[in-house]
Image (cartoon, rainbow, N blue to C red):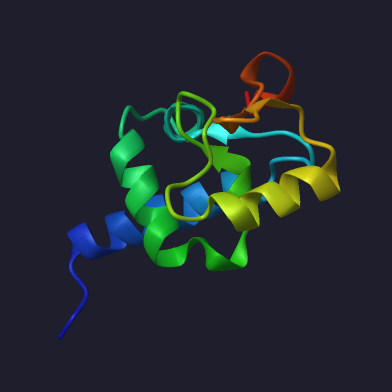
Amino acid sequence: MPSTSEDSAGDDFASRVLAVVDSIPPGQVMTYGDVAAALGSRAARMVGQVMAYYGGDVPWWRVVRSSGHPPANHEHIALEHYRAEGTPLLGGGRSPYRVDLRTARHDAR
């Protein structure tokens, strides 16, 4: 089936999302909305879809929910990465941990 302009627009968005994520330094994070904003978009959910389908080859753990929580169902593996990179965390004990967005948030502008 031939590629349509809509397909290539989606591919372009995906490759731009992955490039932004790949540029996030170790120990820092961006939210899905931050990544979208860095691309001049408000499509945070589309960023999430791109990460779900294509994010395995980039540091996916550096993209977190707006609350600072890691991607759903990947908390344990993300925590290993955060500890290895020295990413500032909050919580623990009985409450789930989350990334301290005040100190770890990367500004891609």
